[in-house]
Image (cartoon, rainbow, N blue to C red; front, side, top):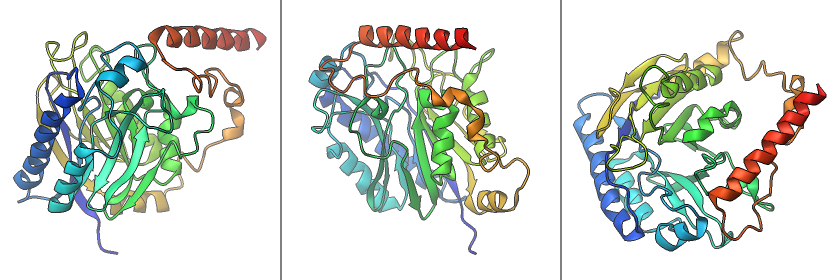
Length: 338
């Protein structure tokens, strides 16, 4: 077997948050330029084949209702911006995990999705819609919340650089998301994130590093994680610590940007041959094959019910707050019954 080894680049940005969709194009120009920098700058070394950008790279949900987001910031996918990513991916023969778009879809006319695309020379390979929006503040729809949603919420692309699966920011606080991507065949778990202080890449919490390393080792997968690095002045009311990183299948940090705001590119090797070998030969610490799914009654219950926003015409933070309160009540009822 020909060894499959290349470099991945986790890119972080520090740009003002757009308030209108006509501002998105300038940000795409910046990220296309960073893609070229990463590939050409590191060309004397192990070739860069995977480039990852952070959540909210194109737009953040700065309005408190879905209707306002649709008025000012949402875009369909594909769009003029994804076409530009396809063009540079073909030119450089690379794969790009885009930063997120606020996506509109005529199939779901009242809803907004927080969406990232995996783009390669072939075009758009997968479209991942955030399954766990950061509620109550995010008023995106989750595929889980829509009755009749038939697309696979956890797509994995089989590519010449390995099997690639992505999840967005808060999704990574739910081990089930990355477990499902791994069960679907993902060898590289890509994190597109906007993890703010104090939970980001800074002590004393540093949830960012802890979670990235844990998801890598518990799924025997590489993690390529790009975090938002905008200063408070660019993305209020939060500041964003960056710390973009690449982790191997045993949880070893291969490269990480120093914590703190600022535009940065970090590069490290991804060895698909090695991760395939480990998955094949391991008997110990092969957690996916050791998974005793029937042992966990919690998964036979529903706390945050599916399909509850299917007919909602304008999701708001108040809707999210009510749903969270109802879910907590169900959780408390379950604890009282034990």
